Length: 285
Image (tube, rainbow, N blue to C red; front, side, top):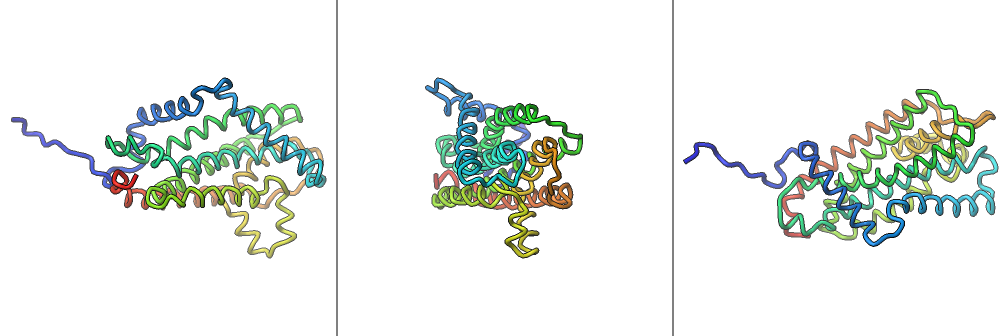
């Protein structure tokens, strides 16, 4: 008889997100599976990642930029809007799909044990795959508009991407765990996405909030990680194409690192709640 002792992984006592890194080969398999399932029977396949944001962009630009003339005070409004829209699209898809990820993979959750965090994290990766074509379209539009960024602006774009990815992962872990027990979480997240779209400076300039709100309200507004990420993308892709003086939010990089800190806090909270609840997932899904 062997003297070694077999050990078994018990839900809720693993290493959490560290287990996702250790089993990253499983993460790749889940991401591939999600992409295959999503585009099964589709003629365009991944090309929908280009079509959907372009249609959304055209509709918003026509309705707000031409009909309502929201962008009259914003130079190069089309690029300004699109650089914010792709950030919101990334966050919306990642957060929404991460919320549904445990319930959507109920068969795997019931049959085998693997780090449950794999499913929300995979949802964020899938959203990142869809984000890449949108980023390529944005880069093409920026180059056509005379884009000439410096190294700090490119760093700002990377920082904005990381902020959104970490925030979506943290909130996805939190909402995904809650959604196993209360399916209303999906609808709440859908409403939050609508709120995020209109409370981030995507379709309007941040100075409009400054004119309407008290200084402390503006401070809270600018500390929202998604708002910070949108402004960082404006700084990286829109601002270098503008030939006239425009006002950027003050201390943008400092605010960016504060936003990253808040995103990390969401990640810690999401992981703690997820690990407390995951032991009951198999019974509840």
